[in-house]
Length: 142
Image (cartoon, rainbow, N blue to C red; front, side, top):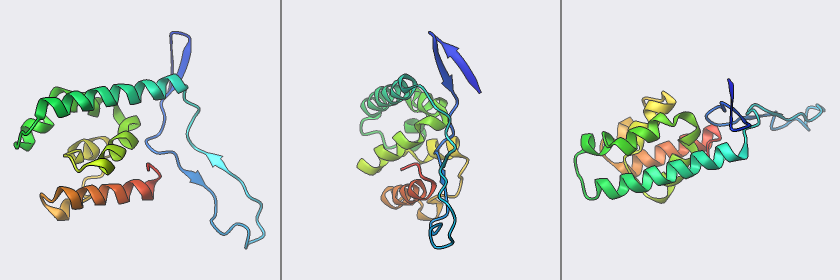
């Protein structure tokens, strides 16, 4: 899906671009081919999404402060706006999660559709974060 705003063309990008090639292509005598599945996205669009994510996340952290209620934390308007940004923010959420375990798990579940990542760890944010980071590495989002 493409749309044009202010003479910059934007394309809806997949959540995490995948590079597809056989790891042992050279052993099989195959020629190397590289296919980037991510459409070209305007640099302005990426930096704009990253900037918006960073601003919303900063405001969210300020507003939730020492709040202990997960429902209040995840119903904050800034958290919900981050979810509304869609798949393009998944790498930014994961990078944020690398720095500090925070309750990004509901946002990640809502955006990615991955409902079982880290569920076995109950309320242990560090272990849930590690499970999401592992998912990020496996899917190419990190």
